[in-house]
Amino acid sequence: MLYIVATPIGNIKDITLRAIETLKNVDLILCEDTRETKKLLNYYGIKKPLLSYYREIEKKRVDKVIKLLKEGKDIALVCDRGTPGISDPAYILVREVYKNNIKVTPIPGPSSLTAALSICGFFLNRVYFLGFLPKKENEKRKIFEKFKDMEETILFFESVHRIEKTIYLLNEIIPEKEICICRELTKVFEEVIRGKVKDVFEIFKKEKKKGEFVIIIKGEKNGF
Image (tube, helix red, strand yellow):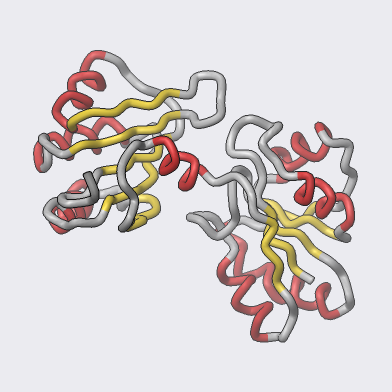
C-alpha cells in the first residue's frame, strides 16, 4: 500500500498520531529531502530506510516504487512540509499506483493552505487555488488581471524572493481589494497581515519580510 502522509509545516509537534504510527510501520519512506525528514523521524524516535523523491527525479523513481509495492512493501510518501500533492511531488506516483491496481491511503494532517484559510476571516464559499505563481512578472500580471473582478477568493503561495514584487504588482492592479498574508505559519515568527492591498503595500515598503507566504485575496462578492 502507498500512504500519502502529511507532516508538520513548521512546528514539529503538528503531526497526527496516525501519521507517526504509519511512519513507524511502513517498510520505506519516500521524501523530498532526506535531511529534513530525518529531523522529523529522529524527533519521534523512528528509524526507517529513506529514498529521495523530489520533482527532478520523480519520473525516474516511479518504476522502482511500483516494483517495491508489487513485492508487498508498504511505502509512505512525505514532502518536506505539509501534504504531498499540494504543490509538492505526488500526483505522478499516485496516478501510476492506481494504474497498477495498488491501494493509496491518505494520512491527512497539516497544510499551509487550509491553515491560512482558517484564519483569514473571509467567507469561503468559493475558493480558487493557484499554487505557486509564475516567476515572470508579465505572466503574473495576466493572472491578477484575469481574477480581479471574479467572485472567488484567490489563494496562492509566494516565495521570499518574489513577495515584494508581487505585493507591488497587486497594489498596482487591485489596491482596494481585501487581502490576508500569512507568513511563517506555526513557526516562531508567525505573522498574519490583513487589510486592503494598498495598506499592506505600505507595510511591505517599510519592512522587508522574510519566510514562506500564503496569500489570500477576498472575492469580489464573496460573502459578507
